[in-house]
Length: 293
Length: 201
Ligand code: SF4
Image 1: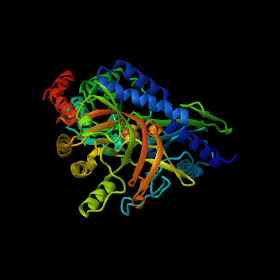
Image 2: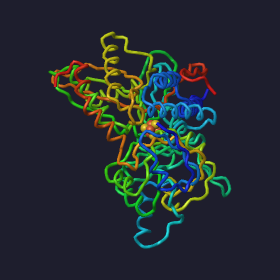
Image 3: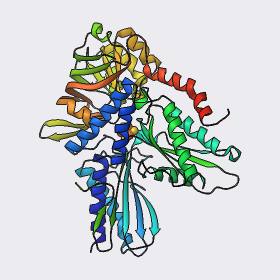
Image 4: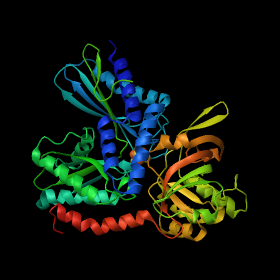
């Protein structure tokens, strides 16, 4: 069994699923927002998004022309074989996807400004590794749009202000972002750990389905409160006004240093592209987010 | 909120009928221009050189399309709008010199452009960010491409479109700008949100 080949094929399929088919939970949230939006202009925008989502599926074309920066999350079973083959397989899958789907080449050397042309480059696609018990490998592909990435923030808040400081931090970030991240957006927030840890956790929560709130009831309430508050801003779809500014909020946390209160907000646009699959030890594959098409 | 369907070339009189929050669909010719094409067009004007195409009454689209070529024929695969604020430094001159009547993009534009839109008679139509396939389906024909030396996203693409939209009229020729209005309202409502969250500031 050639794990490299299997991973490459699965990763290619995941990229394809992610960029063409929005996850069901995001589609449902957009439909609900469309039904509930009271601003005519806002409604027109949500209708255009829903029409676009449908056309993308019909013509099997990427839902947005910015097919993003490619990131993989790998949960590797500690007993899985040939883990050293995965990185290369993911790079190959990225190259193939760029050519065949096609994806927009979005990987630029920050010093020479040269575009590699195939969505790969130093540290790109980026891989997040996690070792878990068992012998299967779970792969998740995320393609992250630039417009919504440009408004992500991290901050070092005042520990004494506690969660209130966090609430203000996130609302200010949403207001400052305005129309830029193509609202309605999805917010991933995290506190604690350190600057790097909070943004990493915040971004990772964007992989969670919108209808899955935090199991801790207190944090789930914070998610709801932020959701309602963000939608009170009136920024609306595409910043043209309305009550749909965010589709969902996820919060995660790590323990913090007594003197630090790191916080991070990661934005995802309505084109929230993600797809996951599990590769079992016997080589069988289960697609977890999309039915393979 | 009224819905308008205009064919290019669009007259100043017609474009002045539009008000913010109206919806516009454009049929006819639109050209893409991002930073580089704006810069080059204005240089041409300064040197007295004609543009490859007379833009009077047409629409300029802030877009770097994904295109494919079969034989000699180009097709637009995905063509969503890009952030318009980058073109703010050029757009007033562009509207003044070339008399485009519609500027299409996402995210809105600033005061200079808003003033030029009022003065020379144009509108800014917001096309839904990310809705790349919706846009591409309205492009019936890629009539041509100019300045391909700037790279495909930055080149000037000439598209023949049918009912290209919906464009939310976000800046009209009467000095209104939805984006600045929304921003102002958001700023004004901020304290109410802080209160709801139990913050005292
Ligand atoms: S912010 Fe998202 S939806 Fe908007 S253009 Fe970028 S990738 Fe597409």
